[in-house]
Length: 538
Ligand code: AMP
Image 1 (tube, rainbow, N blue to C red):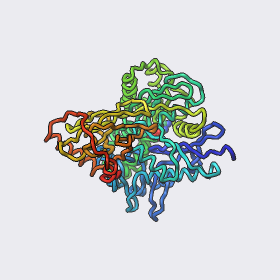
Image 2 (image 1 turned 180 degrees about the vertical axis):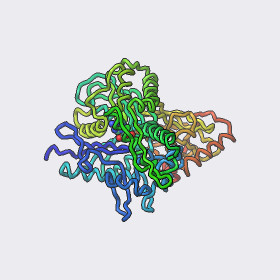
Image 3 (image 1 turned 45 degrees about the vertical axis):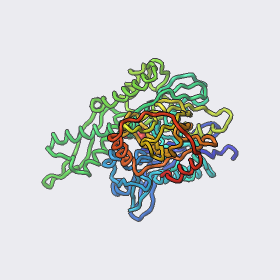
Image 4 (image 1 turned 90 degrees about the horizontal axis):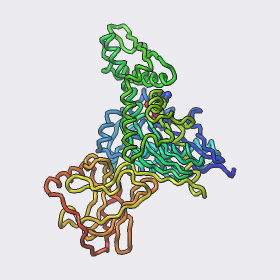
């Protein structure tokens, strides 16, 4: 068929993954799993050693927790020795280990898997499903990622796509994809705010839409604020009420906790539709040979009281993002909701009071990201292609000997873009190399940022031009000047980010901060060969 799509858009979510394709300019979600439109982002190894993906993998979450890998979107592209992985280790029942390249990796069935591999299992399942549904090979994809994903995380998702057999044409930010689903080909001239409250994270972006030009004006969020926090509040309430009524503390019983966690989330979701529920868990515990039942009513008002401060926090973040760019709330023409938790009536009510208008109806909070990614894929290369002017969500810079970061590219810089500067001299006078350890993050302190890699060039290159280029996918490319012009440098990784930070901290204690100056240049021969021979990425 002439118009059969060969490219799909994929929303690779923390909880669920969706795939969409465009036919005759209309994007549609492809049914993926057991007749549903979503594929749970879960990969598992069965007791027999079979690889399971999607609903069947999720089914064994309670019975085989150590071999069931869920929520891996929070781990992909992270270094094993990073604060984020440290914080998440206790959260997952499966083992998180150090991969050969220093990245976090996971184990299942006694075997080590990289996180791009795990995501690739989900993506290749989608590829097969989409090919069957659309009736032919699908070779290309546009895959969405959270706007706050750093360079490592974006590269890791691209790798997952490649491993699944896709030519990944673009990595697109989720809010930008949602905006596309709303505004594509509608000839709008509007400022919109995309409010994305998912299972684990909150993300906000403000965009200006002018025809098919989508410009991100500002972005921000909190990577530890989402639906799971709402569930925890309900859980704490249930545990407390049960303790009051029975004097029994269930917080020591993992099975009871798991049951309460599931029931808390279900109650929260039900309260979106109905005003009262009863959390009913028969035989939650046994005391003196007698079963104890849990039966606790919960109203929507009580849920609002338990979680109102979490909702308020999302609006504080919205205000901060708007203030950073000097945009007034009244300038926002539409608020687009994304993410399951944004369905909560309190969220919708507060949008109305905060922005003076109700959220936009007609944009599906679960589907819009995949639909937008598919629209972008379909438009790539066509005459009336969309223009995306995205923004960098976290600044990029390099570590100074005093433990601070010298910012090179500021937050909210419009991408694609390039920033040039002169290579500083080596940190230690007399060292044969200049090493720039590159970090990304909001803090001025290196230790609080994410390590991206190291540029290592001979000391003779001091004073030469170096470019930090951000591609349209928000990926960093570094080029350094040599005799034949600007040459690309592959970022290298050092031992571990922690070892690097420690070494730099020790150096900071020994040496006073150095003044940067542009000086000297000489022998170009071997500049690139030495860069490449000394380090290999990963
Ligand atoms: P997402 O990551 O976008 O799939 O969002 C998942 C989160 O949305 C989970 O915390 C769900 O409990 C929550 N969620 C899904 N549906 C609803 C609903 N109708 N009302 C409130 N929360 C919901």
